[in-house]
Image (cartoon, rainbow, N blue to C red; front, side):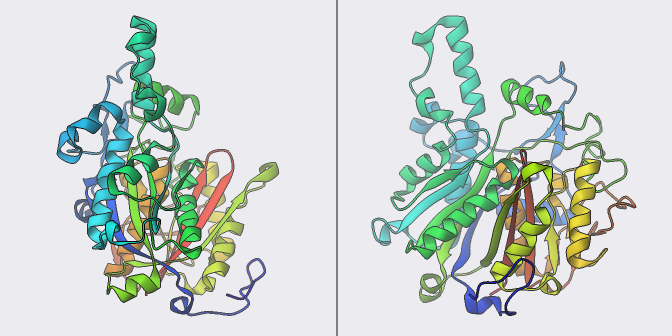
Length: 415
């Protein structure tokens, strides 16, 4: 693709001509549905998974709601030998990875030995596992700490366990950039595809719904303390008071487009554009990330059919995102949606779940809704989709901001 300057594509390309990496498999573990089909159906119904916490007693805390993945029975998804050595987040990741690999319809063992890898994003690692072992250390002594603590807490553990379970020995890694991580990991997987990998399992899953994780969430000072699950997280609304935390995310099979075509694989869409910026000096750079991602994809703002917003749920952050979108597309110039309003913000899993929603929007030609917010605030001039909207969708823009100044944007395109 011809090099382009910021916001000015050197040419308007048909994304199909530049496709190198396509998504052929999706696996989901989300608070409003376990498995891609169940989650997508619930999302189109506007069904929220935000409810009272059950994974621990939250009665002493100022926030007592979250998005928990429902119906996940550990030993239905993992062999017994893995249960003592894995945290909740790794179990969810292994389930999502298996669904994605089954969905893509290829056998990794049939690929060259180093032809397939794993790149995931994580923000918290195995927080619950780590809490349990710290409790054992202080209450019983070091001899009662599990040997698996040496890796079960680590950010890279999901990548490692997926690689081991499925024999994926190719280029692998892990990305840590909070809510932006799901996009950043997928972009890194695309780089590996460009370097010669045939297939990469990628995306993000997070879970830190335990007292230790809860202390960290509360310390950040950004959680909504509204008790009503239906009113606690209201992206772009005048009444926005912060966000709700959730667990889960999505993993994908990203595949070399030529290889996918040769085996006549079902393709959800192509990962055609990506960019990342950092808010150095406090100046917001989300708009620049979006422009660069569109440049990378060879599309113009008028080619974008829907934006999956970062949707912080805080007044200042929502206003800044709305202003960036208005600069790019004009006030209310493009449909904007935030299906994470049904799950809460999932840390590294949040942007990945938005990518899954974007891909299924491309497939089904429908934009999923934002729930809770019925009308955006006057200073957030966005065309917010609040009921499923059937409309042609060729290119979707996904935005994500990670705590600390990370901004990422990706373009998903129909093929």
